[in-house]
Image 1 (cartoon, rainbow, N blue to C red):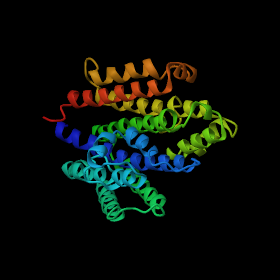
Image 2 (image 1 turned 90 degrees about the vertical axis):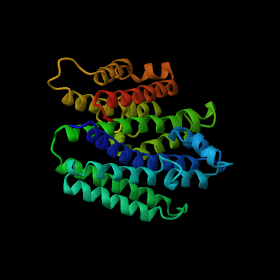
Image 3 (image 1 turned 60 degrees about the vertical axis):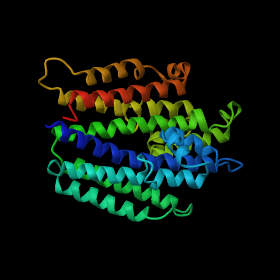
Image 4 (image 1 turned 180 degrees about the horizontal axis):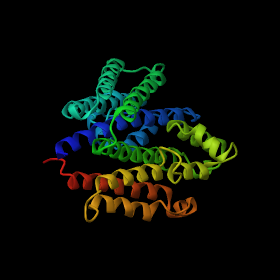
Length: 313
């Protein structure tokens, strides 16, 4: 496969996943903010920081308010990671690799593009926000479903999956960071009803509440939730699940090669160093520090994939 085609597929699915994940991150911030006794706009600094767009936001805006932060994350043209920007970029990449996609996938991405543009044509009110966020998740899931249902399991599919799971792992880490490191007001709140409500919000934000209850029961708490979202390979948005899928799809692409390329070796190293310990070891290391290490490692893997498969040649 040409590097340019691999690049288009990789980024098409990364951008789609990022659009969905940004919607989830907004929902996490919104739900956690509702647990506060007092509304404070500065809490959205945390959400912008976790999304990796705080600096760009501050360059364009003098003050941070809830409304401005949500609008920036949802529909700002100046924010290349806004939902609208990501969906437009995903469709542009899909056009570049049109012949590699099935008709059903192409129609799904077009429908997602048109409906997202319509929904975000104007500023979204707080009353409309849950409906709009839900619609974004549904539209991106439609593309994912068509991909699973109609695409051949070949290198085209592998690059689509690699883009998806790199972005998803990054997002799960960032949503955990919103809760544990930034949004929790004080250490004294740990273990309180406020703390528990916020952890419940994190589960909802990654569509994991039902699965968690099946796996751990109603009495489980923050330690179990963290374990579920980091180490449980049954949970399709956990870090361990996403990294395992990266490993599998990279291994398919490496078939026939005498030795593994650096990207596969990096994924192996990531699994051995960070995802074979129990949750107690993660907390002992420091959850925020662990998350930051994961984000750094994932970014390095993404850069190495671009090099290994000559994306820009």
